[in-house]
Every structure is written in structure tokens, then in C-alpha cells.
Length: 557
Image (cartoon, rainbow, N blue to C red; front, side, top):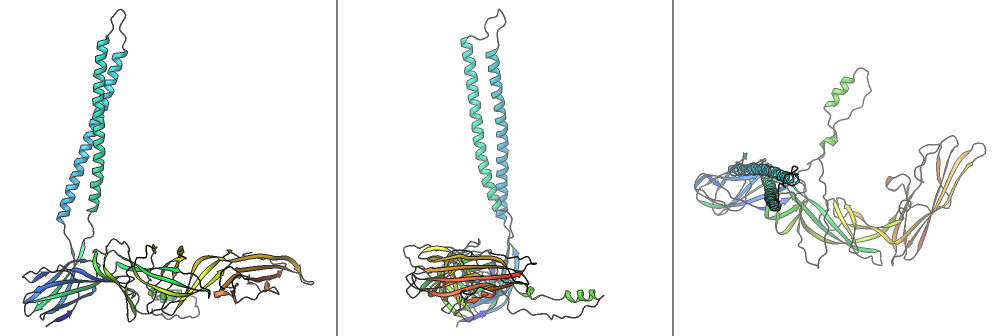
């Protein structure tokens, strides 16, 4: 008979049975589910349980794990019961580390003493060299007294030179050897200091979980302990590769989904089954509550009442939790068309789960583990957009609708056109069925020019004189593609915030397709399909009138 039970806990690998009440669980991490912020870790362990009550102890778990999320499951050939699950923080003692630190500190002290002795030896040798040089100089330069014979004959002079040369050579050799040893001591000391820094005392807290068991008879079981940690997460990154434009003005985008998986807990995830989830368990669980906001007339002398009343109010912003931020995206290098493993996608209610193929290792150094999730071929509609007032280039834009069943989390996207890296963009949060646009750089086959054809300033009126300023532009767009393409030209005209100042469109101008584009006042857009090898001319102009007694301020032209 097989039995299963649930509670709170973490485990994985083999268990060392002890024929006593306490059983030490030597667990290993079996699988990890990583969320955009946080992760759920599952450990596994096999245990042999004797008849009676026992305590299964898991030591060395991350101190930062959420104890509220501890869960334990057990499956065995015989029936057994899982009782309470206890957790507490313990401090790891490390006598071995202390002994190692003391030994290294003693070695550093000995090397320092040896270096000081060498300093003294070098100083003594330098002093002896100076004395020998002074002695030789005095002997050779001393003049004999009048009527006396020479102090040194040829043989004596040769002996002095030999003595001085030999002694100076010996002293120089001693100095070189001492300095060489000092350099070696410096290198050894530097290495020992690095080792000492690595052994510096750290926050060595760990979590201990105790699972109380009761077995009517001897049994063997497999236990799974799961818990959640906050110091982990994954960030989406994308590659968007735009193919060639067809004669219908459409193209296909190869959208590659990738992820950077990071964790900086106190344990390494070695050879685990890795799953990425789009759920956000660390985020807010409900919309924030709005506090009542009353308005009443101000009564002099009641300022204190208003102040006191406002102390307890909570702004809606205070109840909103911060959202996760995407990370920088790596670039994907094309190699000889090797097939890269992708994730197994599973839709589970309100979340998408990406099961990474094979076993994965993610160390706890906060270094990104890059994994590939999926590759999709998406139909895109191409268009060009230009704002020639600011930039003479037309930029290629691809609009597409997200297909499939899984959403796209916001993140950076690496943009490629014809296999060439064009730059980096960003994808917003997208659900299946939503449309978005990506820019793929300047399109050299769309030529756009903006030429000023009129600028006139004058005074008008008979009884009342006003100043006028007229400006007109010709904007031309030419399509050198082999297919027609939709084009949007952006420009602007000023608007007035003073009733005495008027702005009007000149007669004969090309009507804008959209005025106040995206609620940006004064921004105009002309949208049209431009056939291959054809040119479109847009006439744009305006007239500003204002009284002579007003000084006009105009930003832009």
C-alpha cells in the first residue's frame, strides 16, 4: 500500500538512516520553479523509518526561506503519518575555518618578520659598500708626505683593488638575493591575505526543519520538501529577426524567447529540473483600497483639525507594490544551424509554465544562466515612418499580433534585419491577440525630403494692424522598394494658448490624416500607401497672426 502526506519542508537526495528518534536527511534539490521574482525549491530524500515516532531533520537550508511556504509530501510502501513541521534558525560553527585562519595569520606574521630581517640585512650591506668605497678612495688618493716613498706600490695597489672588488661583488650579490626574497615574500603575503579575506566571518545562518513522523511498522518512504525563496528570479529577453519584404508588403519575424535566470541564495541549484513561470506570487494580490476624500469649506482656526484628520490617510500609491524590471538582453550568435533545445510550454490556468529541457545548474553567485524558451514565426505588416523636421531618415516598422496561448512579459528585444544587428528595442506586456510594433532601423529605400518653400513676415490690417508669419513646406517621399509600402509622415504646426494669437492652415495644403496624434497637441500625421518607384508630395503650411503690442514666443522653427 502506498501512502502520501503533505506538510511543510525541503529535501532531495539520499537519507542516512539512524536507528534513533532523529534521522538526518541528506537531501538534494530535485526541481526548481522560478518566478519573475522568487522561486519555489523542491528537495527530495529517500528514508528508511523504523517502527515508532521519529524526527526527520533537514539541516543547512537557506535562512531566508519563507517558513510559511514550507510543504512536505511523503510516499511509501507502508502507511506512515507526518505530524508537525518545525523550523528554526541555527548558526553553523566552523572550528576548521577558525584553525585555518589562525594558521594563515601566523604565516603572514612569520613572513613579515622575515622581511624585516631582510630590510636590516640590505641596510647593513649598503653601509658596508659605502665604507669599502670610501676606504678605497682614501687609499688611492692619499698623497705621500714630502720626501716619503709611495704608500702603495704596484703590487699593493693590485691587492687593494682585488679586495675591494671582491667585497663589493659579494655585498651586491647579497643585496640582490635579499630583494628577490622580499618580492617573493610580498607575493606570498598577498596570496595569504586573499585567502584570509575568503575565510572572513560571514552571516552563517541556516534554517533547520524538523519533520515529525509516526510509522506503525518499519517503512521506506520518499519525502519531498518544498519552500519559496525571494533571492531569485528570471527576466525575459527576446531576439526579433525580420525577414525580407514580399511583394504584398508583408514579412515574417522570427521571435526567439530567452530568459536570464538568476539566484543569490545560500545554496547552489545543481543538476535540477528547471521550470519558469509567468506567475508573480511576490506581487500584490488585490487592487488597492481607496480612502474617502472629502472637500469642505475652510474655516479659520481649524488648521489643527485638518492636519490631524489627514494623518491616517493612505495614498493609493502606497498600496501598490513595485513591478519587476527586465534585464539586459544577450545577443544570439548564429552558428552552423545547430538545433538549440527549447522549453516545453504548459498553460496552467492563469500562468504559463516553461519547462527547460534536460537538467540545469544555476549557481548562487547572481550570474545569469541563459536558457532558450521558444521560437515563433510571426506574420508582420511593414510600414515606414518619418519625421523629416527632425530626421531625414524613414524608419522601418513591423506591426504584428501575438499568436499562441502564452503572454509576453515586458523585456528588451534585440533587433535584426537581413541578419544584421540593428539595435535594441523593448517589448511591452502582451497577451495573445494584442498588437504591437517594433522599429527595425532606417530604411534607405524610402527617401524623404522637407523643403521650406515660403516664409513671410508682414503687417496686415487697415484700422487695426496685426503681425503675420506665414511658413510653407513641401515634403516629398519616394519609394524605391519593389513593392508598395504604407508610409506615415509626421510634422507639426504651432498652437495658441492666447485668444489674441491665431494659427490657421494655409489654403491649398494637404489635409492631415490625423491631427493631435496620440493626444500630442499640434502633431500631424499623413498616412498613405506609396507604390513602388513613385513619389508623394505633401504640402504643409500655416499662418500665425497676433497684435502688434504682443511679443510672440515660438518654439521650433
